[in-house]
Amino acid sequence: MSQVFLTGSRYLLSLLGLAVLIPCVVSLLRQRLPSPPEAYLRNTANGDRIDLIYWENSIGRNSSNDIVFNYNTTSRYHGVISRRRDGWYVTDTGSSVGVFVNGKKIKKTQQIQHGDKIMFGGAALVFETKEGMENDVVFNRNNRRGRV
Image: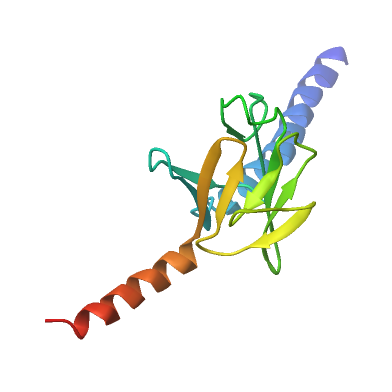
């Protein structure tokens, strides 16, 4: 009797394991690959491109931030660049120096556009979007056509 019970429980546990495993595998296979970033920050000091891969990207001197700048004038948790349905925004998270957009200090949160210059303490950056860069290329091509 106990032999029948052991054999039956082995089959039952195997079926239960498959019932859990199969939906997990199907879910993994259906998952979309991550899309390429829609926006970037271009460091004006060295030209490095920093991809904005999250909907909220924290910026500061602390290593727990998504983007880390080791400048003395950059606060540990300086600011956040976030994506919303109506565009991109930069927020000052209580930094001591402040966040500047196109040379003007922002109070709390401000929407940003392609080509805006953003300063987080000593870090000077240019905000670029994929769409804005594509428009720049079309504009540059159109300008060249009229020149000799």
